[in-house]
Image (cartoon, rainbow, N blue to C red):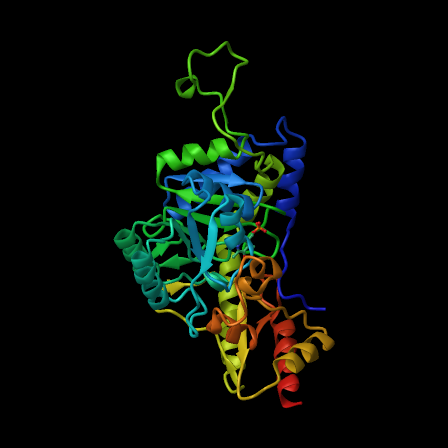
Length: 383
Ligand SMILES: *Cc1c(COP(=O)(O)O)cnc(C)c1O
């Protein structure tokens, strides 16, 4: 089976993990700080805060902005459930903005229209979470403009977009978002096994995030109420969590990070090859924005021309191609239906879901394997 995504681990990664196992630190220590610094520098952001996964990153990003009950978070239905769940963890209400049928990202026109109506109704969102679907940025300049106009915060879920760029600057630089989230799950661009990270240029948010990932505790006497009792002393200032990444994971992540450009170049090459090899088939191929360089986490095609989506999908799986479908519209999940969302609420995301197939895309995928995928797809369509 050729999977849709997988990690690439080399001897340097293994050596880095073993070296950490033999060191004095296993949980959060010097490897975390080094990993955070490397990513912050590359992304031209002031701060990076590493955590145990991107879901935890989204959660404490919302908490750092004091999201709470009665308030609203908006995201896209074409995402992994975590982009919405982070709002629910804080007791806030979640709502969705439908996608652009071409980019498959949150539609900026729909966002503008929904904001206009929300302003009239007095129910504006506190946070909007645009998701850089498949690794390509949303129209972040427009979203930033709207955030200034309507006063909401932007948490960019760039779980797919590690190493991507937008308008000539790295995703995560903070030009268009208050915080940017990366995921290091094994199918993503680089991996730490499980892992996530938050980038921000705001000192206050970075300090708060670092505290929230570790029980809400500080050891900094300057931040304590009253005097410190002594060198052993810490204070819990608010309710936090244990969302720390281990040094073992960060050592793996740092080692992977050294090959970021290699990984991205391979993904770009595979995407370019798919574009050429699939050009004559009745498929909608990924749209390429002129102002964004995708990290190509996913390569999604939409079957067209009256093709039976399910038949094509099943034929590929039967042929040993581990295709997948990203994403089941979040609002159609039973949990979100129990909150009042229904089928038909976001028609573009639902139409997309009825046609989309994620083809294998990962740095270790060989040309010959990709040719096998294309041949199987051709056959599935011809059948
Ligand atoms: C993978 C992913 C997440 C969650 O990442 P974890 O690190 O697995 O918690 C969140 N949002 C999106 C868009 C993702 O693809």
